[in-house]
Image (cartoon, rainbow, N blue to C red):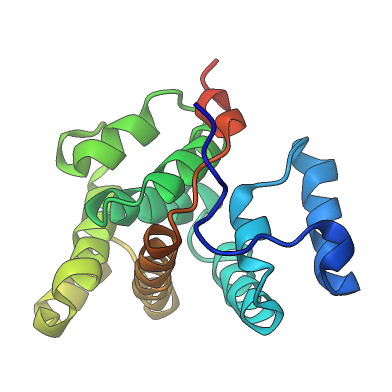
Length: 189
């Protein structure tokens, strides 16, 4: 069954501002396909630029959390927020970055039952609290993270990634943006 990419307008590459079309072409060249979220968000160019600037600042930042840890946060919080697109797309990235074909499915369904280290468990407990109960965060949460080995910058990143993807999950769900079929099999072996 074929579904539209989004319930909102999806411009063609020819209709997009050149900087956005160029970014999408680079993504397609690297991955072999264009992730639907790029096409769906392109109908609002200023928002596209702001969204991906913050995404890249969080997810491509050097130092601190590993790229696999960053993806663990995305998959866990996206599962909590019932965002099919982000679970599927970032699950694929997580499988590749963690070199583990099982971890994304485990974390998306119930990170507490997943094969995780104590450090990863502390990280996801905090990410979950940011996603679902941010008003309840207190000093004890930060103490637990420091005891798990996280520094202030890493604690900020955990919170910022969980918060950003909370917004992303809601935006993607509101737009009914569908994950590309290509994501489902990436990193599975």
